[in-house]
Image (cartoon, rainbow, N blue to C red):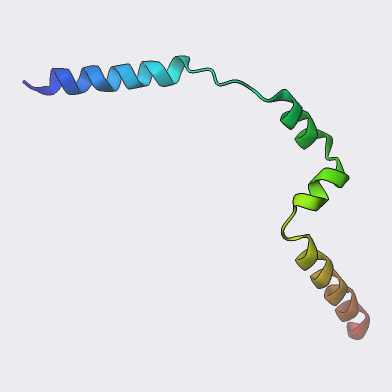
Length: 65
């Protein structure tokens, strides 16, 4: 006994989640899938590090040969 109220609340939450349909931002999805480098390059916080370490890696490759 006492589980009925808890089960009813869980059922209500599960039903909400099952039938929940959020609004989709198709423009944001299109930008993400298109891979437009002008917009994604400005927002990439690691772009500077990637460029720096790519240059370091190129220098190591020449020293090994």
